[in-house]
Length: 130
Image 1 (cartoon, rainbow, N blue to C red):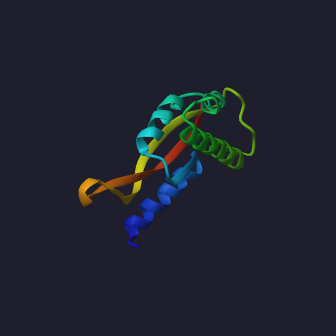
Image 2: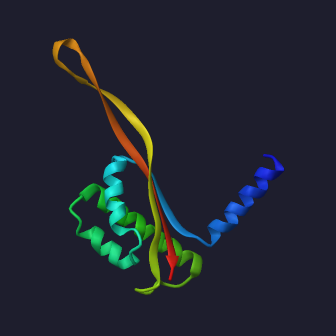
Image 3: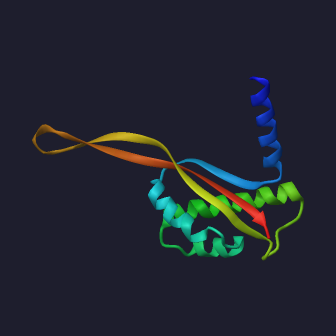
């Protein structure tokens, strides 16, 4: 690794020490479905967001996102050493990126086959104090 890249990597690591985040990689849900749920909780207080996700009808996406926000709260507790109050933490950023796609074949009429893309995504949640 060159000197310039090493300095940039060290600066990124230092910045991550003061950030409270959690990420979920290769989640087998389409990014479109996950973005719908992520848009609901962006900017909310953490415990309000957990309640919204708990009672959301989009089951696989909302339950995975609920676990991810809980993980980010635990990361906050480990980095700071104290438990969050009801009004201190909020969801600063939440973004969903597409991951790999499994390409499958479905039989079609007259000896043909149709392509099916089974999509997956990466989700990152960043929390911040008010």
